[in-house]
Length: 162
Image (cartoon, rainbow, N blue to C red; front, side, top):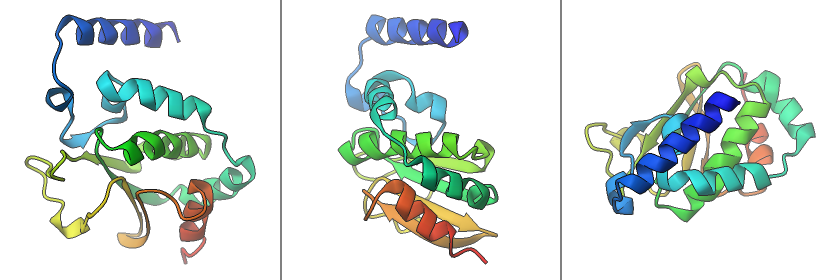
C-alpha cells in the first residue's frame, strides 16, 4: 500500500510539474489499467471506483463464469460514459477474481482513432464498449452504459456460454 501511495504522489507531482493539455495526456492505442489510474483520468477513476456499490450476489454468480472469458474494452479517457463505467466495470472484475491477463483495453481519441491499432473489425460506434469473448467467439457487448446494471448485463451475457 505504501508503494502505491508513493507511486501516486510521484505521478501527481510529474503531472503538475509538466502541464499538458488534456488531449496531449490522452492515451491512444493499447493501454493498461495502470495508465488509466494516472493523469487526468485518475481522479474520476478513483472516485467512481470507490463510490460504486457492487451487487455482491451477482458478482458471486459472475465469478465462476468469467474466468475463461476474454474481454476487450474500447474507451475514451475524454468520454463521460467511459469515466463512469470503466472504473465500475474494473471493480466488478476485481471482485469476481477475473484474470486480468485476459483483458485488453484500447483507448481511442475523440475521432475514435487508435494510432497504429486497427479496431475496424470491432465495429465500434460508441465508447465505452465492453466486448466479451468465449473460445474466440463474441458472446456479448455492453455499449456506453448498461441496459440494467453492469452486473446484470454481464451476467446475462456470461450465462449464455455453452
